[in-house]
Image (cartoon, rainbow, N blue to C red; front, side):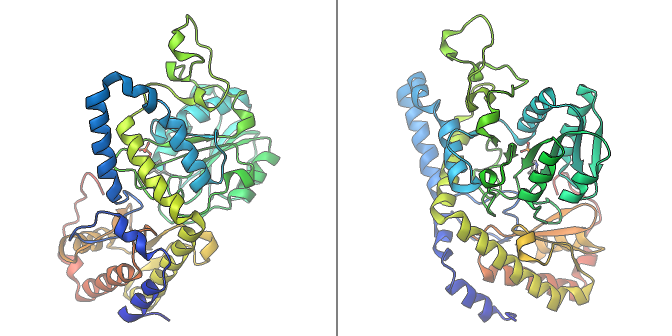
Length: 408
Ligand SMILES: *Cc1c(COP(=O)(O)O)cnc(C)c1O
């Protein structure tokens, strides 16, 4: 049992990734346990954005001859450094929401049957998938869990299965290879949302034979607020699927400005319009840090940080009315820990306003503690849970207001 601050500090002293914390800009702020919503800024990002500003000022439109390479170049960095995919299979562009729409629509154009997701999937995923199914006149099915058994149990023919690899609320990690296999056995394509797993756990898209994927870069990949998302299309599917957005950045020989849409044969056909270069430059900086640290070491630290939090929860918080929502088996969870409490909102507000701890709240009763393996210390986990214990013991959360904020 590691239940003292000295134990946590000993874990930090033995952590091979401890030095990466100095690569981020970290001020005097709170104990940050919400890196799963927005990662911290890498120090180098400030220089890269400044350099882009200089480049823009001096080269003006001529800068595009280099900038135009970024969606694919940064995609390759992510493919090889974080996703277990190959160069030419990943692009950085648009938002997760828009990429989901593009890939799900393309999958339904190519394949007959229902759209399957799970009830607890992230809202934008459920909304987009339901909308895409409706537009295509297909059945939309929400199963109970992101498991191979659930996929096998769907009564109708299935065109597309789409789950998150790590569930945004519970932190449960789906069995990506087994679900992919079950989807393929049903004759379906599979579309993974990696928003809560990219940069935190080993994704292994290639090894699993996954078809399609999307994900965020502003969470564990530290690309900054609103940084563009990524998409993955397995190489052999790139020419058979078509983007529903026939944009000029996906056009073969784009600057010939030809009369009709004729998409690029490869991954580039999934681009739509002009890419957001400042965002791409920031994603590149974050993705380089992940690649340098190595995703296997990052995933190992994620399992250790969450194990530490679970141990402290069991000792301190369970007796105070908390319940662990996240799976206990290390191979079945991502890098955040979700705790249920009847007063979760007030606990969260008290932590933020009075205890110098910044977690987040998810409806209806979950406090999430997210640990970004490159910059979270075991001592941060210790302090965050220790302060949670102290304030609930004293009943300080009961003094907070029940009213929700616009952003929780
Ligand atoms: C964060 C997150 C998103 C966000 O999508 P945006 O289009 O970037 O707003 C989508 N899906 C999942 C699973 C997420 O965790």
